[in-house]
Length: 331
Image 1 (cartoon, rainbow, N blue to C red):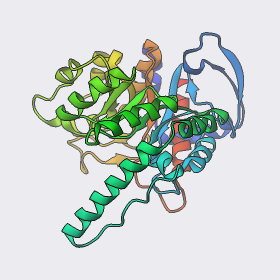
Image 2 (cartoon, rainbow, N blue to C red; image 1 turned 90 degrees about the horizontal axis):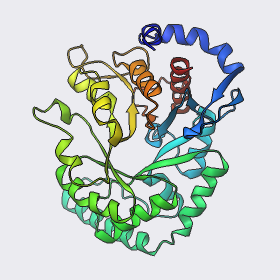
Image 3 (cartoon, rainbow, N blue to C red; image 1 turned 30 degrees about the vertical axis):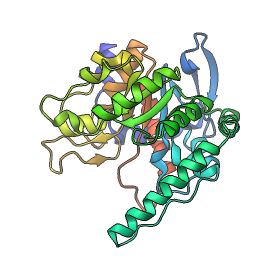
Image 4 (cartoon, rainbow, N blue to C red; image 1 turned 120 degrees about the vertical axis):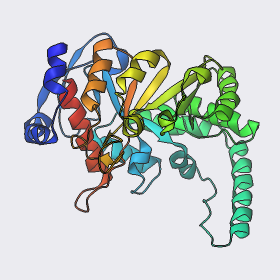
């Protein structure tokens, strides 16, 4: 494993791009899909949707495709084209598909905007509480039939009414997810942790640059409830602190459901803490993936595409390139 780390830890984009053409065309690889113990041989072609490599599940947050038309049918199409077999699903993609009231347009007058948002929030509450959970069962079947698993759903419901929070966890469960994602904060953790436990689900919390603040730690949050889990954003962590993300992953691996994967510059580089094409930044992407592979931890590694996409490409093509980049590291 040490030799493997040395050979792959500084994996360059140039080397990757020079080697992917033949690999993508045809290869035989052992597939250990989502923790199943019996390896099988599977042909890998440009149309495969499997993205478990060396026992590490590579997925994507559907936010990665925010620049493209949304909706469940499009998300499934993008997953197939990018070779993705698991997702962190943004709730707007599924709610809009199921007929949620349209989000309001931005208005110049502040008070008018507040009134519009208040009415929209009330309309959404009424719509959510009237929606049969069977609708989410139907959506899950669409993903299942395409070979795609929804492991978490980004509802961000901490400021919703208790009835809507119950709705979020019930919907996530119907979709086959482990829990609901929210941004980390004391109020949100204390609110969602006990409710998640009541539903037999996880409340999963995402970080931005909080670790750059002196004294910030996960410890106090994790004592609230065993149902409090982490969606660790390794890119935000590295970009804002310059510290190796594996220090956090090793310490909290049993409380981490998923990791947001991205490449970035560090805090002392000019420009600092800036998203980069995978292989062109300083984030130790290979080290993270190889640690999880070595330890066999059941942590999802989700691509979050945030770097600027060139006019000749699109978000689906870039996510596909990230998938192939991860595969080259892990296989």
